Amino acid sequence: MPIAFHSIGDGVTTGIAGVGGKASNLFKMQRHGFPVPAFFALPASAINEIIAPVRQGIEALCATLGGKEDVVLSGAATEIYNAIISIQIPPNSLAEIAAACTQIAGTNYLVAVRSSAIAEDGSVASFAGQHDSLLYVDSESLGISLLK
Image (cartoon, rainbow, N blue to C red; front, side, top):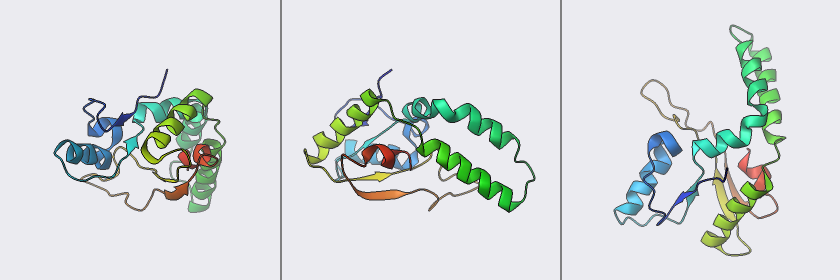
């Protein structure tokens, strides 16, 4: 299953459920003519597909964490992080992402990669600052940058 990109001019209406509030609002601003820098977003369905190989292990680990001490939670978080960054993004998916970067920023691109969450800011809690923004990502570091 190929990764579906939602970007400038693709004709896809992207909602919060697909890419999160920030990306959804950027798409809306683009459609209304605001000067938004070129970008694309990987929909949640694409990320779910990429992390599928480790999802069951992560869910099993999380199921054991209720009421645990901070040191145990910290160790589990490290284990989950290591599982995610060990994923090998399928070559066709990585090629599709690299092609989108090339389309936006040229052959020798340097792009920013921002991790996010669908429900990053909700009515009960905000997760601002919980995610990474990586700058000057080139073609050699693109794969690992997408998983951080």
